[in-house]
Structures are given as C-alpha cells and as structure tokens.
Image 1 (cartoon, rainbow over the protein chains, first blue to last red):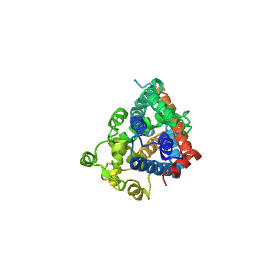
Image 2 (cartoon, rainbow over the protein chains, first blue to last red; image 1 turned 120 degrees about the horizontal axis):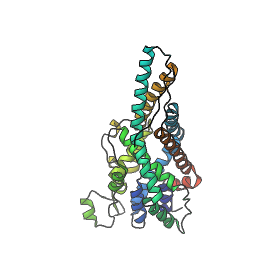
Image 3 (spheres, rainbow over the protein chains, first blue to last red; image 1 turned 135 degrees about the horizontal axis):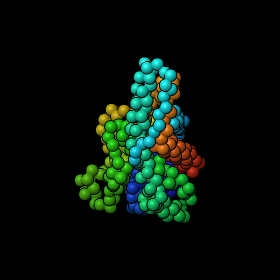
Image 4 (tube, chains in turn brown, cyan; image 1 turned 90 degrees about the vertical axis):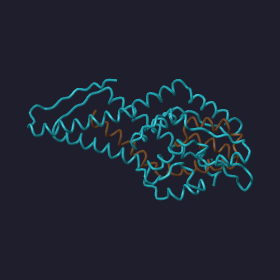
Length: 73
Length: 253
C-alpha cells in the first residue's frame, strides 16, 4: 500500500484532525511533500495505536456518561 | 430550550432527609443542565451538518475521489465519525474551562501552502529536510486548533506513560502539538468522569433516601446523544482496528 492511500485510510478514522483540515489535506494530497505525508501518517498511526490500546477505557468512560444519565431519568 | 421536569418526593420522609434530598436533587439538576449545555447544542449542529452534507458531503466526496483507483474506502460511517468528532470537541473544551466552538476549530484548521520557495518557507518556520524538501511543522498541516485537539484527545485518554516519547518520535520536536505546557493540562476525560461521579453520587444519595423522579425531554435527548456518541466511538474504534487500517499504519513504520 502506498503512503498516500495509507494516509487516506488513517485520516478517515482519525479523531484528532478536524474535518475542515481533512478536507484541506485531501484537496492538497498530491502537492504535499513526502516529508509531510510521512509525518502526518506517523502521527495518525500513533493515534491508532493509542486508540486500540485504550479502546476499553474509552468505551468505559463513554458508558459511564450513559449510566449516569440513566440514573436520573 | 426550556427544561421541563416533574419532581416527586415521598411526603412521608422526615424533614432532615428531605433537606438532603433537595440538595442532592439541586446538584443533579445543575450538573445535568451543564452537561446539557455543552453536549446538546453542538450535537444539534453536528446532526444538522450531517443532514445538510456541507463539510461532511465534501469530505465524503473527497474520500471517494481520493480512493479511486487506489483503495476502496468504506464510507458508511462517515456521518457517525463526523458526529463523534464534532461532539467531542466542545465536551473536551468545556471540561477544561475553555469553550471552543466546533466552527472555530474548523476555521482555525488551516493548511499552509506547500509550494513556496525554500527561503520563504524557512521564514515561515518550515524546515528543509535532508532531501531538500520543505517540511512544515505538523501543527501547520493540521492547524493549531487541530494540534490542540490532538493534545486534548491524548490527554483525555490518560494515563499515557508513553505519551512523551511519542511526540518527539513523530514530530522531531515539541512543535507537533503547538501547545506548550501540555503536561499541565489535566485530563479532560478525568474531569468529566469526576463530574459524572458527582452526579451519580447525588442521584444515588437521593435514591437511597427516597424517591426522586425527574422526567424531562432534555434528559432523554442527552441519553440519545450518549447512545450516538457510544455508537460513533465504537464505529471509529472498530475502523481503527480493521485489517485495512492496520495495513495503512504499517506503511508508516
């Protein structure tokens, strides 16, 4: 898989890149220097690792919100 | 929007307990209002955006075009992804005492030009790589607010003992996050959890002491919001865990 394709896939699942920035990045994907593609790709790959590592904790915290709300409904 | 609620307190309770009940109820209501304020409005905006397909539509189209001939991108969950992304920002922003509107975040996420001469680029803070390529700090690519958001998200899933090694690994410097004193920012999620614990405690106290029933369309809306966030989080996390994403991540190792 080439890095541009990989970047697109990682960008799609990213929490940290705002949607407007996603649009901007995708629009200029062909113009981005490889160093930027590499840096952004590494960041998003790291983000993915962190998300997977703490998947349960993230969901647990979200569920806590639900549980709390349900208590007073 | 006016919050409508009904309150029922068992009249047989002693007055001392009733006082506690009222206090607990007041605490719960205030916290619910706060949670509502910071969750409900942005969610409506996010839902509207998903419905109107403005940024979302553009994003979907771009993902589709970008994928042509290169990769097949599953677009089914785009709206959910955007909804979760937009919804989380005000949550985290408010939790840390600084309300950050999703629109401001979006506007601030400016992608700098990449075709300038090296000299001009250097003057703007870019770096020149060993391959003579111009490389901007990553915060320029994802925007300052995007970088702040990164920081918040990373801090929100504390504790991350390996957070600090990651940043230099990716960026080569602290410029990545564009925020100094990152370690001083408390975990947004922890603040939220603490608040939710307070709500839970107040509600439990009330339940133990007697019976308080709050009925409100607003509360139901929050509940629906919570469900949608949970669904979106799950979808995003599943996407990140997919073999396709694993393969993509492998390309940057």
